[in-house]
Length: 477
Ligand code: ADP
Ligand code: GLC
Image 1: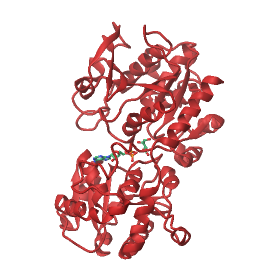
Image 2: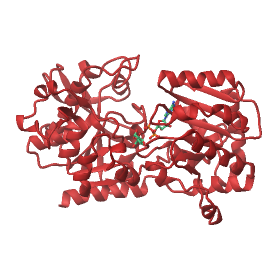
Image 3: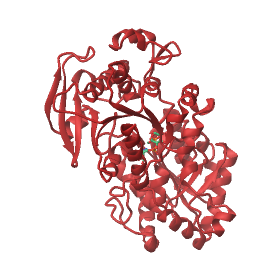
Image 4: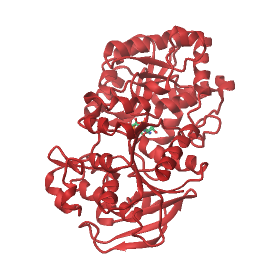
């Protein structure tokens, strides 16, 4: 079976978050099931530099953006298709916005063009390329299933929601420029609250909809999580499923991780202490007996970072330290930097994006804090499990599905892998951090939790099989 995966990021070429990790890793998992995945990416500067390809198609004018070419190549042995549309993607700044963080005003046109090109390939319009199924990821690819549907193409499509908070909503005025037929302007088409909804269009048109954990699949049926799309998700409930993300063990494995001063396994946990010293050095932390908590995250409201920022004085009082790596809302960045200045030697903050440092933190800190208000899946708790960096998580979405709270029963049965708390409030987070400090003080008990986490299997095996079964079900239907 041949699948075209359409996404706006993929590790190791371009990454702003977990979407890239998933799009980068899923193809290998699917290969084990006889499925060849070709990943289609926009030709951002980083993609054009890293991946060469030969031209297989040219549009003289793709959706008003001038000349666009399709390049076919590969990266790390995986087939790749790049949409080289310089007017849309050859820009300095971020993938979705300029250096100040403001969205590109023509994002609708950029990703409509991307989706249109993908659908053109999917429906067999590009010589030499043929696929059995198109898999669209997030709103940036959301129009692809819609273009297929309105072109009357029989190829099946899957729409995966990585985060329903990002929907690609634009004004009604763009509709005329999308090149869709008039009847696409409909409640069961691309129209969404009087405008155009890219994710909404994908959810309507795709043959199956997935999201990245079973709990999130249920949560988005509710208005507080569905963010306006809950009605549509409910309507399509029979075709919506939740498949939890896996992790790429070739990249995230403490036994072979080049970013760690000391490599280790569940049997050699004592070696982690060299990594902890390295974390202390990197973050200017004074030595101490208490745990080092870490955060590796976008600093946003979704991630509950405002609540964490309000807990830092108490975190220090309880004898813990914090090593934080992240970037995001300028106000939150300043709050954390101010806390680092206030608690020099106890709170260390690095604003920015640093892949190797994120590995060091997982391999050297004692616990990772993830107080998300919602979390479709979350990957940092899975990396934490694999690295013996005990996850302290809010009970929501994929965090609820992947972590076993260290309650009395779980401790008794020796199956606890982390700490969960309900409701993202100061009190609940402080309570969870205090529990962590108590458990940490009992070395044997803490190591038991670390080892259980390291044994948990969140490699892509099971989830790859679930996607393969979903694809087969659609194609055989
Ligand atoms: P989301 O995609 O919502 O941001 P995930 O937990 O699914 O959350 O994925 C986040 C990914 O981005 C992980 O691979 C994490 O390690 C990485 N990451 C987040 N912030 C940083 C950072 N500042 N530096 C390096 N990696 C980061
Ligand atoms: C989104 C979600 C995150 C998920 C990732 C990959 O960024 O916020 O929870 O892990 O996509 O699916």
